[in-house]
Length: 153
Ligand SMILES: [Ca+2]
Ligand SMILES: [Ca+2]
Image 1 (cartoon, protein in one colour):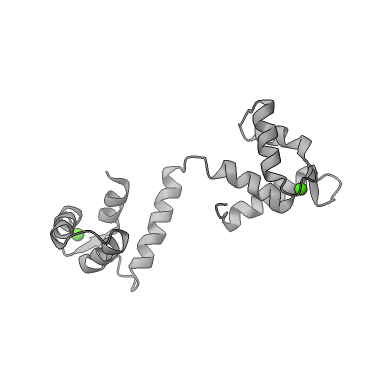
Image 2 (cartoon, protein in one colour):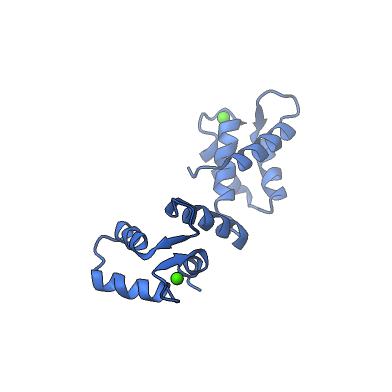
């Protein structure tokens, strides 16, 4: 199961509580079709049954909150991320590498990152890649340059 972040969890908790009218800590699987429809997923009965069987792991006919999260994760993670969310994630990734908060990553650090991602990469390949990425030849990669690499634009 994909991890949900804190904001998503909070939203799910609110949604769960809203459907759990009687505050039993469970919602009936009969609700699932309705919930998914509200989220913009119209499923035929068979698909719906399959999904319910899959998420209702203890077969109780009701979804406990953890099962509900499982269900949501299936649909939330299928959604295309919008650009804004992606840029935010990349910014966070960039910050991880830019440990001193300089606003740039040195090309040496970037080489290390590429080597970690692909240990078959040759030094020549690396140099070529870095040359392309560091388009102004400053020896450092700022966020703009980093973004271009990651989004392939
Ligand atoms: Ca259950
Ligand atoms: Ca540069």
